View (cartoon, one colour):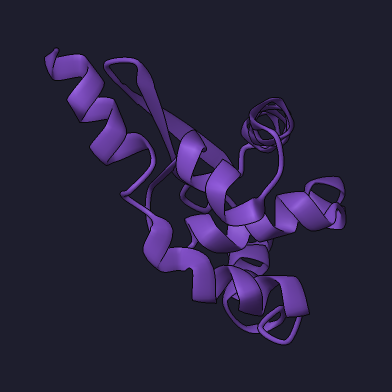
Length: 113
């Protein structure tokens, strides 16, 4: 789990997921990194047991996995309080309103055609 927390991009993803479910496209938009990079980091976080995925049609939505140990719970608690002053995390919070505009809105429009 420490390795999962050691990468800045994974830390940003975890922080964003701490506020609720997010699709890959929204993460790409907020983090401004390529989709394969986001997917690779999400895969790493899933293997570490920190993230879970839910598929809805062609979209995959990610959220934080529930804590399974006391250590896991403490790491998740730290996400909410320890990293608030990291500049990239503050910027991600400002970009957050972009959520639901990438995957969800565009994805539904394409699925309905």
